[in-house]
Image (cartoon, rainbow, N blue to C red; front, side, top):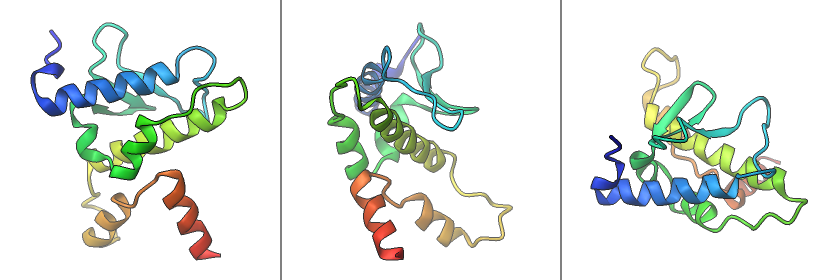
Length: 136
């Protein structure tokens, strides 16, 4: 039995996951670099998967920055030409949330504080573009 809707975070996560997956329905959902955002199953719908990693939908809101959440809440409607943009936005942001959910790699040579800082960088389109502009 699916108990995702018992908590406020669970209800928020479920609603956000439903919105994301409905935006990716049909021809919009593309595989990018061999990866795509998927449900764990059509019946359960309790986890979002990207490749072999996943996040429970109840944990989704807690592992997104506000900008990322806003991007996912306000995905553009499919107009026949923007399926790559929609799929890429969902893939990048959900992958970031999964990485945050998994946490830091204790066996890494990179210090834990640096790993945390990288994990919690915002991956919304505007912040990613700003970081790219700052590097150039």
